[in-house]
Length: 195
Image 1: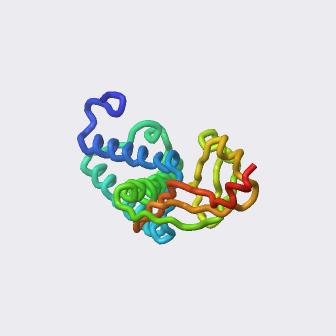
Image 2: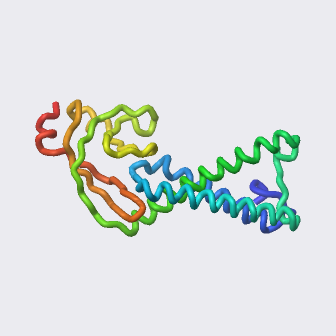
């Protein structure tokens, strides 16, 4: 494990590094699974939880530092007092966002995958070209307002869709935390209007 820490690093610092790495990996989930939409209420609650967890982590880190069980390393040691004063809030803000991604999306997505109610609802959808490599062909659902939401389709299905708004039925896995939109079916009229 010399890649992650030196041999003489205390156990508390190893736990800290491992925990931080798990939070970082969890924050990647919304990049790959973009069809989960947390409720507005849960998103707000997640900000509060993230701020609280970050504050508790900062207090714990300070306590470990005072007990000589944790020491900063890497480039932090070369920073002067002014640069440290600037970097500390930036690091805290970054950690709040990482924790928020886990609390607002990653953990609720896992929960919703296991414990959900199956729901269908009608919606109007439109085809949309994506800007990223992984999702070039998307279906946009105008009434879903969430920054990280994408519903991807393959190029063949995308080309057969009519232009403009189309009525569709969404298959949703719903929990307290939000909706996981896992399937979409165009109405019969929209399918017959497709080229």
